[in-house]
Amino acid sequence: MFKELDPLLHSQLRLAVMSLLLGVEEAEFNFLKESTGATAGNLSVQLNKLKDAGYISVKKKFRDNYPLTLCKITVKGAGAFGVYTKALKEYLNPKS
Image 1 (tube, rainbow, N blue to C red):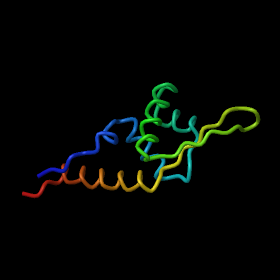
Image 2: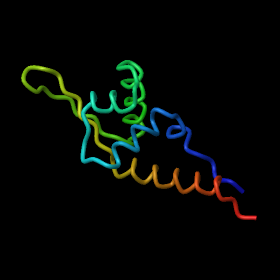
Image 3: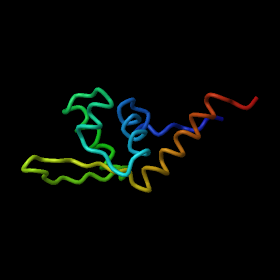
Image 4: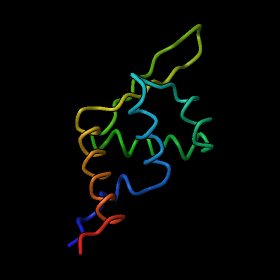
């Protein structure tokens, strides 16, 4: 029997964000926007969904009088991503 895939991570943009955040300590909003090709509005909405689920933390501050948004994956988010990828691998290699 196949495990249910986390619907929060099954979105292409949220999955891309989580994948990027796994490889860095933290990432700036503009880096995520450029790396995913998302619009600022769509990325902002998806980041809020991940933050509300506790999968990422979002820190807002200023750098040289310009707003700066930093995102970081949480322990809960890394765990959820691991469970998701394991379940996805089972879909790709089902046991007979």
